[in-house]
Amino acid sequence: MRFQLYKDKFRRLGDHTEYGTIPLYSEANGKNLFLPLAAEPLLQLAESSPGWHVFEEVARDFEEEQQRALEDALVILSSFGLAECLQEEEQREGVWVVGEKEYKEVVSFIREAQAEGGGYLLEGRGSTDYFSVPALRARQFNNLCYHFMYRRDDLIQGMMFVSMMDREIMPTAILLAGLLFRPGLRGEERKAVFQGLLQYVAGAFRQDYAKLRFLYKCEAEAETLSLLLEAGFRKIAVLPRELADGGSVTLYDYDMRKGDAYGSSR
Image (cartoon, rainbow, N blue to C red):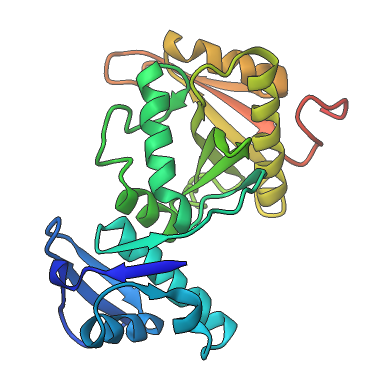
């Protein structure tokens, strides 16, 4: 991978913070960002030798863990427009939680999926700030919301967002905060993508949580609800006059400990 840092687009705000990070100010968008201390060699390189560099040559003298930290720092700088990376992307297929390298692609996918008008978002629909790279990364980094992607044929086919609730309020459940699909994905293909996402999420959380919960608020969510019911979600409660307009909220749960979606063990 080749990369370069745009030193004129950021400046340091000090050596490091009490939390073990390097504070930077982005001249490009007026925002602060924080890099791990392991990123120090990159900043020194930007000062001493501006221009393009080969990552493998820069990182070869470091241990594997330090190399990963350097690569993550480059991705963070790139997401803020402070660095550029050129590499041949490896093609992965399957489901996984979104990582540093994928936030920019995920933001584009969310915007395209919203433009089609389908899918489900608990909050933030239509907001570019809510689904920006820094906002997505911050929610995931702070254990507030995890973003899972289903990738096939070098394209994101679908995504599921899972919000982590206060365990004193909701001790056994996590919340389905978003479900989006690639524009044009319909029928059995959409069902298969959803099944893959649901199985992965259930496997990731079932040791600590029993239920994946969905809040049904209006008719616009009927298509999503139909998909969930077929997969094994069950109505557990109705909260009348819960919304500001006097509408009700219906709660549906999926038991993550009872087997795979569409299986016979529900």
